[in-house]
Amino acid sequence: NITVFFTAVTHTTVANAEFIGTLTPIVLVPAGAIIFNEQINARALAFGAVSIVGLAMVLFLGPANGEASWFGNALAFASMITWCTYLITSRGLRATTSVAGIMAAAMPIAAVTILPIALIGGDAGKVTWSSAGYIAVLVILSGTVAHGMIMFAQRSVPVGTISLIQIAQPAMAALWSVALLDTMIRGVQVIGMVLVLAGLTAMIALRQRSSR
Picture 1 (tube, rainbow, N blue to C red):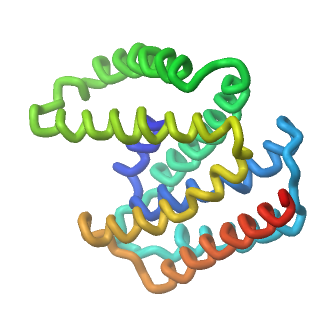
Picture 2: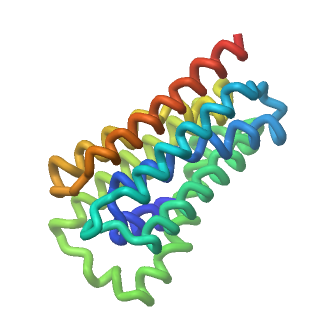
């Protein structure tokens, strides 16, 4: 998931990659109902259509000379699917295994899986001392702490709710990409982003009401 996502953002904009990731609840809410018998609210899913319309505005109405590409968007979609798979499979593991046990197994497996790809592709040789610091921060914060906290929450929080709580991330990432990477975002795309977040917020409210 992490490898595909970071590859995607080299072929599309951060905004596109993050807002494609907002499709996660639309996949996980029904999946959680089917696999884990979690409660589902049909009205909540209806608001997913609003988010999809907003996402279409973000993807199709971007600047003509922007950095986005459909190859990068496809990679971002694949990243979203692998993230859904991660949440579903790790949720099952949490019933019998501790967070420390899962992470202790996952991290070495990830290293063994990715290292040959990095060596064959020649990317391992491009790591410099200055970039090593950034890699270490990503490993600690995103790869270990963030994933570990999500896995810890899965014992008491439905997977659909976990994905819904993360709706602030795409908006924050889009704003930071404009500030730090000089990404071009059109006004109509901002409207699409608002629709995405509004639809997901409505899903949260209805889902929480249904849970109570």
